[in-house]
Length: 550
Image 1 (cartoon, rainbow, N blue to C red):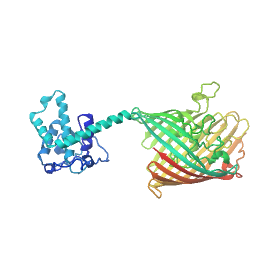
Image 2 (tube, rainbow, N blue to C red; image 1 turned 135 degrees about the horizontal axis):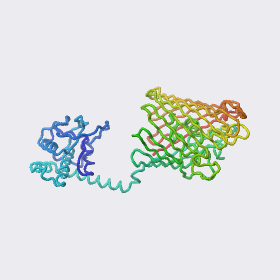
Image 3 (cartoon, rainbow, N blue to C red; image 1 turned 90 degrees about the vertical axis):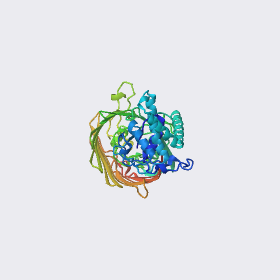
Image 4 (cartoon, rainbow, N blue to C red; image 1 turned 180 degrees about the vertical axis):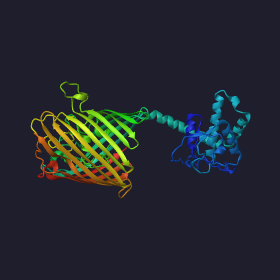
């Protein structure tokens, strides 16, 4: 590829032409009567996608090893390039292509030298251009008059289109993307032992990604939906069956948190994420500041089924519940690349940072809080692992994950008004083959009552296999098996409460890629002993999810 010096708009066109310039030895015998209407010169250009290397100035056309012309036109252009440095090429002296050069491509090289010499004359350095060179340029212009006229006409048209795009663009710093999910769902079982209607719901997300430096990112995410999912919404599947283990992947719809508050009606856009990330220390550390966010929006999740639009159809199957503790929060953190294969992430968040009311109900340090640190490492090219620790304070007697009922993820003891939890989690994703990934995570949560001597240990884990390009390119299938959050031991004043069995989750789904922007995912999951009670009927949930991205 060449870099053309001269006017900005003309350089854009010349750069495209010169990307595959390779002058033919038979140029002098080319047909001068070539029709520009039947042979579009732009069709001859094939831009290469090979890795680019930094261009350097070329002092002679003959240095470019792919070009071996013999006609007078090439000799004349060679002389001009040597004296005025019109063109730049690759350090390895090749054109990155072996296509024969058309008259139009050669005209692009000539136009580059015309622009360069015009610059010299405009700068008051006309004495630097010899009369012989001007005469040579005049002769070349006459020889290639038709091609130059076509080239400049195309450049003028490109200039007009560029100006129009700049005038009509939404923003020079912001890009919009989005995701729309349609979900057809039905279920049965649970503590209430009910069967649901077949429901049809949606969730819509619009994300504005803004960069001011090219390295930073300000993200604004708006969200709306009518499928809230949790037992907090009386019309939800979870409320009907009596268990949050029945919740599907798209989550809480347009709400912020684990349930649908009365002041957040369906089909209304709300702000679900507002965060800003920027690098420091030569990019080795990324700083994260978010007035509205979730831990999983910043901390790396290794599970290949984490996406609620492309991954697991259930809420539980997406990722480690440790990332859901404390729910929605403000968050500040950093991501430090310690070495090529080791990263450290740490952050602190508060659930009600804008609440100025006294009495310990909010602010950065007065309400529910979370401090989290995660170490990620890559022992081999096909293996990723992480270890995560969090310390959380909850103003109520609940972990607040929304994965099980509030009673199930609380300390079963009288007089508990707030709890502090220390949680440890581990994640692993092993790409066994290019198309087969084994993934697993496990979490232990040690919860202690703040106001008395009641303590409870909770555990949860999952393991899965994901097959990529299954039946068609870009499609995938997964099988997941694990244990939802469950009380495994209690001490002090705490008891296991109604928990008398280990719950299990089994899930199967297949994501079919219809096109680059559309996928359809049918799937089903079962929860045995939901909420840890063996008399509760097995939960069965079937989902057909259609995801549109743009």
